[in-house]
Length: 240
Image (tube, rainbow, N blue to C red; front, side):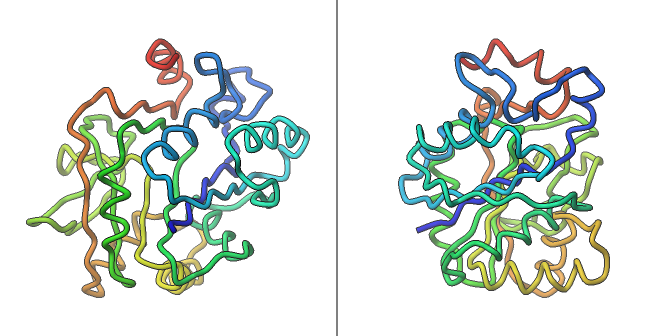
């Protein structure tokens, strides 16, 4: 099995400034919500997923809606926790240690503002990872708002934020060969600075000679980014 953790504890300040009262992941997309489409498409890509959700306690008033979505997708209702504000997505992800999961199993973290289609190949590669290895999902990107991976052969040599050092933008799907490896390395970084991100974590893996591989999604239509209000409006038509 693969443990899939959705980090949805952000403040979503750009959307709140835009006038939205509900969390970004509960905004309508087609006939469903952003959250439903994110989980549904990842579940279609891999049948062997244990899905967990980490949300911000300020959004607990929306819990009935979230649990309705979880129920519709056959996710156990106990697989959600609410946490206080964190300084980074990595710090939010680190809270998944409070779930009762097998840390010897593979673990993947996913953004809740990007709908990823046809990612079967990514999860196939996750199953092949050794304990101390990582895997990035990438797509063709140009925006300076994304993170980018530089590669050498079939491995990532560097990850950098907001600078297109290649055309391989990170989609927000972060895989690791084991929960043990992830938690140990994340703890090292977060002890130094709780604002550090998955970018620094993958660079730590590379620095310690732990292989980080990548999967590149060539079809631009298979990555639907909804990170900003402008991207959300632009991509509304792409999801039914």
